Image 1 (spheres, rainbow, N blue to C red):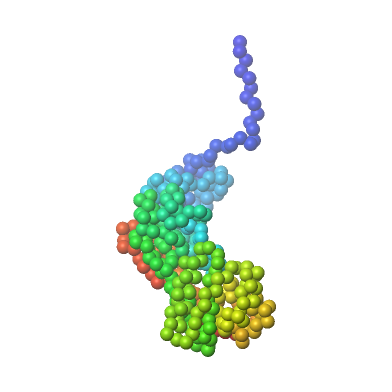
Image 2 (image 1 turned 180 degrees about the vertical axis):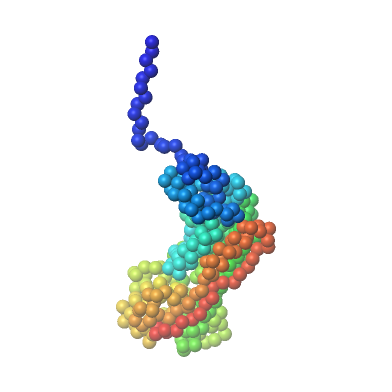
Length: 344
């Protein structure tokens, strides 16, 4: 007779079986349909609050979460909104905007996923985004083209929204008037009696989508006047700022629009270290209206920017998802208001 050996003791490190909605239903004492309605936040079926709490507690105890892919198959599309990580350094103003937008989309039951696209640009990046089958893509400051938009739509994306100075065929667009920022800042300096105006152009990659139109706007602001605009390349680095400050007197400049508040603070400190008076020898203005600029001495003049409200952009995404055949919307955003303080 062959003896059947006893099974070895179970290994606690072995993978456990994945809990299912049936397990949740059994523990909560409800049907699987009720579990689905509760955990997918379905609003078309009335379920009492005690039952909802019981289902959620059962799911928590079992470690159960709904299967996103299965839910997408049932719905015919995912609830994922893909936001490619910007190719430019995101400052405090833009970070606040992203946080508000993610909160607003979450309230509409969308899952926001940020995607790093290091080394990928334009339509090549769009193909990488399409592999994740998002229901919507928000592409800030990217060089996405019409072919990339088409790739995304063929993969199932119902909404493609760009945020930048120009619209892209087939996509909804939030148009930012970056040239207006440069015009406003430079006109302010001109009105304060400055005639030899420098404009900082960051050396960091990815910022040219903003800096180029700001420089163009600065030149427009003094076109036909006796003022001049000088382009000032500057890396976000104390050493580079010190080298530019050392050249200030030979350059003969009397004012600077420093691209934004962070570059303005960097350069202003370097100019002061060089023995230059602000605003006597050099009037300085930035953009973004960061809190830190109000704490400097002298307080930093700036251009206050109004980005689109996160809830408004989330509503645009939701409209497009529910009506993917609608004509692309175009909205001008980024209100710009000069705030005069002591540095100019």
